[in-house]
Image (cartoon, rainbow, N blue to C red):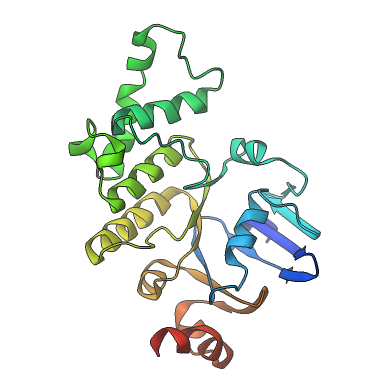
Length: 251
């Protein structure tokens, strides 16, 4: 049923001066699942993400969120509807503490002018919720640390906390484990699984072990088109996928 799908694209296409980066993509993301978007470099994954969150305007096609067309909406309006792209919309300030960063993100959810002009007690009222989010991403012992001093993996965890502060119904994660050590990859993968317990996640991810362990559904892009869809077991055996992506990774 249509209600089972929180996000849907129809014939989504993006053309840049004669180059077709995304071509006729029909994507359906089931509510409450972790859906991975994978493919080789240049497959159109990031362009697709930019289209979904309206950082790019499609050449043609439709985007529907919760059954409502959002193709013509701006990024801020889409975020307010609950479709939030992590690492793009999150408010991380490098020279503020972890607690201050999450508190500012909570202020953003309230709207207005971030309460900068209001008494400090107003900000202190947000501390309990901020600490809950910090604990949820495993950063409780770092709440006083300055963001710029965190390890790369913990910075990503902080970015997820600031995104969660916006109370998203659906999160789009663009390569959440890119450039991480093995220990950080395991930590962030566990975090993604935890935050997906009561929301939908669509992620671009190159680490196939993460994709295999986390994803309920996978869409493979190649040259801007959908090459295959299904669970990891079926997609990983697809001859064209092996040729276009998986085979090159394991070579």
